Image 1 (cartoon, rainbow, N blue to C red):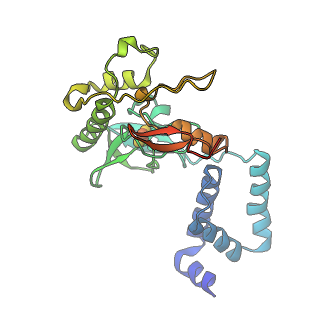
Image 2 (cartoon, rainbow, N blue to C red; image 1 turned 90 degrees about the vertical axis):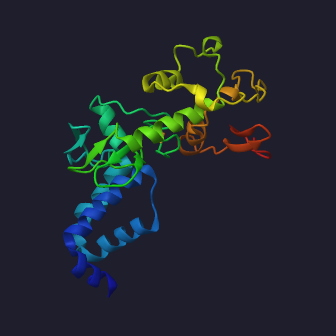
Length: 255
Ligand code: FES
C-alpha cells in the first residue's frame, strides 16, 4: 500500500516531524489537503497504542486548550545578531520578541500574516530577492539581513507607495503622534514626496453613530477585514472597489 511505501522512503521520523508540524498549523486554521494527508499517513503508520498516546491525547488537550508547549527553541541570525526562536514562530515574531525591530504594518499578533505591506522585507542568505518576515518561518541556523540592499529597496518603495496617496497634513490628523504609519516612515527616513500624487478624496462615512470612517487615511493594511473574517467570523468587511480606488468596506448586499 502507498502509506507503507511512503513510510519506507521518507522514514518514520520524518512522518513524525510532519505530524508535529500539522499540529502547529491547526491553530492557525491551515487544514490544506497536504496536511490532512500527513495526518492520514501518521494514522496509518503508527500502532493503535501509539495513536492513543499521541494523536488522541493531544487532540483532547488541544480542544481543552491545555496542549503542552513543547520547547522547540533554536537560534538564527539577523544582521549578525543571534536570535532565539521557537518552532512555529515567524521571523518577525521572533525578532520582535528578541527586541530586534523590523518595520511592519499589516501584521498583527492576533491575525494570520498576509504579507501585504512588504515593509517587513528581509533577505535570506543564499536566497534571491526579499521576502516578508511576517510570512517567513524562522528556521534553525538561518541567516537574514534586514538592511540588505534588496530588502531596503522593497521596503522603501512599499512605504513610498503607501504615502503617495495619503494626506500630507499629519499635524491636522486626529491620530497625530499616535500613528503607526507616521512612526514607521519616520523610523525608515522615507520622504513621501517622490511619488506624491493628489491625495485621494474619498468621502468620510459617518453613517455609524459610533465610528467615523476616514477613508482617505486608510492604508489598506487589511487588518480590519481579517479581524472581521478570522477573529469574529462575521465576514461582513471586505475590499470593495469604488471610483476612488479599492477600500475596506461592506460589499453591497451584506449588512
Ligand atoms: Fe509583513 Fe506587512 S508586516 S508584509
